[in-house]
Length: 196
Ligand SMILES: CC(C)(COP(=O)(O)OP(=O)(O)OC[C@H]1O[C@@H](n2cnc3c(N)ncnc32)[C@H](O)[C@@H]1OP(=O)(O)O)[C@@H](O)C(=O)NCCC(=O)NCCS
Image 1 (cartoon, rainbow, N blue to C red):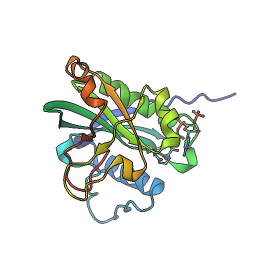
Image 2: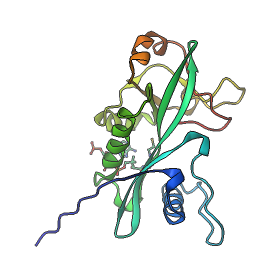
Image 3: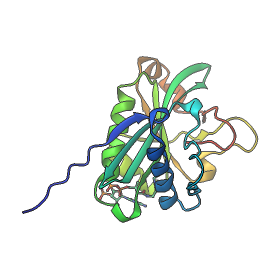
């Protein structure tokens, strides 16, 4: 008899996640990006997301193992003299042994629905160019405008990182200022070293 597995993403503010889930997230980040530090057994797990960004965690466990993860980061950016509440996808990752099984599609869709149903004015994300078609299926169009971490010297930029920018205008306020998102680089206003 065949067994059908339903992988339902869990959705929880990161600040409400347990120490065990935080450890599993850090371990998954380390498996996917080995340069990301593995959590030490003896110490509390360092925060995966800056608390100021009020992250939402979307993740899938199977057989007690965290297999897939995506976060939504929330902040307000200033652009063209206006403030825009921004929701950004971040840390999209699936355990290398479980890729190409549709898991990221599930967590990215769940995260995207959360963004669409939030009070965000815009949804924003950057990714490597080959992955643009993957995110397009979840409703994330590529735009030609660049994103910079901030206006500070040394801030990260989508152009220098070789990333494409995915942008959703969600609110009436964002649509009213659509032209502003077609031209000048969008500054995230994040601390040096942070990006989406
Ligand atoms: C990208 C990633 C999150 C996809 O996770 P997944 O669970 O395998 O995703 P799904 O099974 O839902 O979908 C896989 C799709 O992504 C595509 N894909 C995965 N890696 C890709 C890559 N490097 N280049 C192009 N396409 C890629 C697959 O071809 C597949 O496309 P299809 O739906 O047309 O067949 C996963 O490969 C991963 O963790 N990669 C390393 C971390 C990373 O790059 N994260 C993205 C940060 S923007």
